Length: 343
Image 1: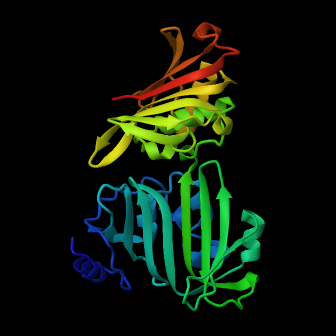
Image 2: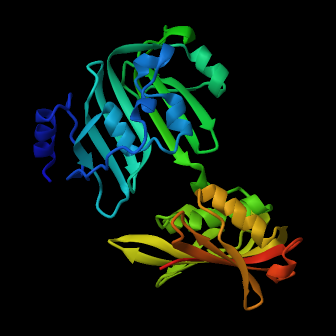
Image 3: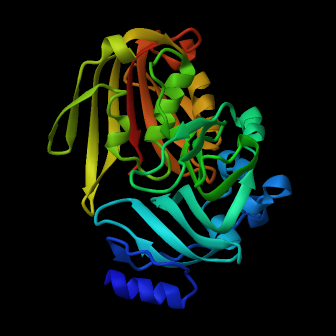
């Protein structure tokens, strides 16, 4: 789409301001909200912010559909070719909002950027008591702004960053005049542990690999080792044993529409990890919000079958270690893991 034509059409549809996007595309059909979108709207002292902080960083049921229902309908979208990332610009529902757009990845809401018609008063000291000490971030060079305050948050659902921009450095912390917020979040299931040493660490690796939407291999780089090379659909890593407890690792992938997606991953751990199949299956089910399936044996290894809430197969996991049978699973130490997504 022509970027200028996309802007004019968006303004005709109710978008305020002027934004020229690099890669204008037709906006996707956003499904109707299945949750209570009113939960996404801020209340109490923070009502002028429009966006509920707690809903954004704790509720997995508050996604793009709920944001659209709460803050405005899509009128312009930006997405580079062969990228899963898309910015969705909305026609603001509130007269107090000058502009708002959603940052998404493969349809998942990962960010909200909102600018206000008039600055909103925010008590940063009160936010610090709830979300930890604020960090200051500088203003862009050659601007007349004062920078802002940033908070890093971690909940059971998301790791998030909350940024509040203001223009006057004389604003006291108790009454920042905020003109823009940038809220971003990453699902905890997408964040691998720094080192593999417990059953929950293994469960997080399995959960990421078997998410209903296939992950991109790049999300495993660094944690499974230093990327070495790609040969066909095989991705090899260099050893990262001292840093991650990974002796060897590799990934198999498939390429669709210019993007790579994981199909399987194999890992050998430098030191055995105490865990058993039933324990792992229960932890994976909790991370993915699916029912535990079954633990069996295959070729002398423990096999885990992971299914979704409807019983559809998400994939299998083969565990090697000592002992290697499901009947002797208690006390098992895992030394190898092979995760394969269902086709």
